Image 1 (cartoon, rainbow, N blue to C red):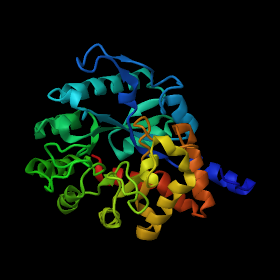
Image 2 (image 1 turned 120 degrees about the horizontal axis):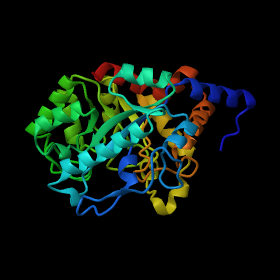
Image 3 (image 1 turned 30 degrees about the horizontal axis):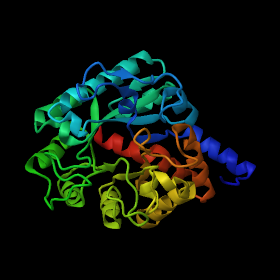
Image 4 (image 1 turned 90 degrees about the vertical axis):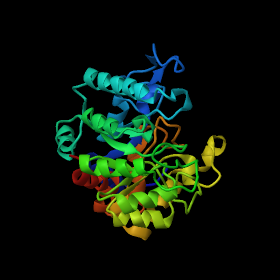
Length: 346
């Protein structure tokens, strides 16, 4: 993919192995679960987190091979089949997550603070952070948010595709602002020490978050509209506002986010060079302090050459070929997100 010299190869390997590499979004838990979703019981697991599999894109052996140290596991319950039973589905997903972590406790641990993450990685384990993707799971009750915090949830993606009780999702545009409940959620998350995730939020709601939040926010899996006018991507103005709040845009490996007109049918049109153009663009726009990695693996994303978590070292190699300093590469791989974690998580 890149013709690196021996010196560059060694440098890339050194940076990757000594950095704390953070991935802010995957859908692995949902991807592992199969069963009669319409009845929401008697589901089974099609694979185990602790065993290497040919299915999916993330498991513990492949995480280790890819040198990724901290992963945010998202629990998404926005599918209409879970309507009126979203909270139960979320609890099922959390049960699977906790069970898999406990089963593999010598290799992975739940983390809820910055120091937890640092200590866990230093011990040689993978640091796992829980996120909920879509405020539907709150079922309009701020008390549910507080209880989810007590269950270890440290991030919330406010909306998914459709409009919910908080505001418009990325595919839904009523022209409305965040609802009163949406504003209350952002304010309560600031108090609790939870990260507000604006990926999937319609632009009107995004600006409401920027006005209301007192803490840095992140986009856990979004890219630049400059290269693809996808509803999940951010404009230059949004990226600048995120940076002004000391937040981070985490670039996804979804082909359609990376290059205009790309679908699964023509995914071969995207390569790592196209992804790196987003990095170059953001650095030129706001500097290197506001970029991270948000794969969206097991959520339908990946492109040739970077199609599972074992291939993340190629990203580091690509950054080296771009001529970025060790410091800049380390920021992109994880330090920028760790800064937000340190500032926000309690």
